[in-house]
Image 1 (cartoon, rainbow, N blue to C red):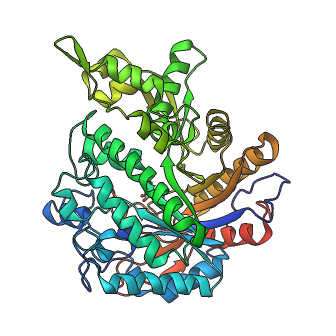
Image 2 (image 1 turned 180 degrees about the vertical axis):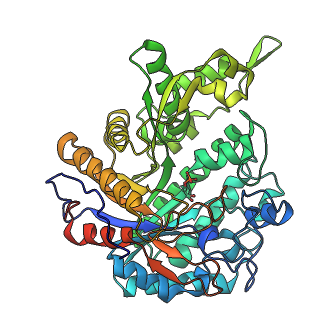
Length: 474
Ligand code: BGP
């Protein structure tokens, strides 16, 4: 009876090639639980949810969440049932290095991640490891967090430990997950931990450190590890597709400004041939920055020529997290009164009438192809939330069908190089602002049961079928 409704299916005749890879993703804070077990240190999400119990909408935290820390075999079995080629998970920096510093190695952290990696490999699933998915060790927050340039060195030391400990087994590394989101919301709007509100300032300082930390990690891999380990190192950048509201020059410009100030902020320094921040972003922010004694002191920091060269090309693949599309128009006057980040991008964006708007992904893939010379795109997250928790999740099935259809069209008809697709998420889990209300899982998790049982939703079965047949409408 549960499956008595039919879900819409894609109508394309194309199939994914045999070397196209499918996976699912999670992140440490969102699924592990065991927040203070076996030597794990405190991170900024432990700290903010404990200090401000209503920071997250439903007053929750991820102290226990899905208890994945205790469920390695069970979760790998779910992955095996899906038939995924890889599992993208993140390492909790403070589980491995409780103080954030590489001297403070926690043996239980090493054990836990080695067991997970081995269990994956034993089951023919590749580990794709995110080094930083937002859970900064609290002691590094006490140094000011990412706006402090010192953080890049801490990160590179941490990355070095990861290569040393796991690099013989892990061949895909993602340095940072969504720097736009954690820089803008962690140090600008304050919506994410550590909740700093320094709009248009803290976020740019954060982004600057992160870009350097990423590039130095890439260089470290090239210099000391690549020859022996033969892996790949990239970064996961996020953006919506920003569709201009009309063909007017102003709306086109607003949509361009918006994507440059979200995606271009991080992608242009790494993937463009010119390197450095996008010129539209540089010009706007410089213009809107304070003039002191005849000098413009831009809120957007500057890279040296050496740094521009270091960052340029520092990724083996273009990790892309994409969830949905928005329509953008030039910002109305009243927005100029609001925080500077909005002014910096000069666009007013809102949801389209068709909330699914999967066509935006195809346009985005084409934009990346043109802007950055067709890099290999690793779609590292894409997914749909509902708050019903229903097992017959037709809306999620429609989402995956329609988004995957657009990926196929981008590959087959537009020659975009897309190498993989990652569904967010394996499990219903803790969602950063909304807690447990928002459910992204291919598997339902019963958070009222102390054992957190998992049950596959309809979308899990459909996704497994897509992976098996390499076709959408089967
Ligand atoms: C991404 C994060 C994921 C997950 C997802 C959910 O930004 O990398 O960790 O939280 O978003 O999307 P949203 O925050 O839009 O609900």
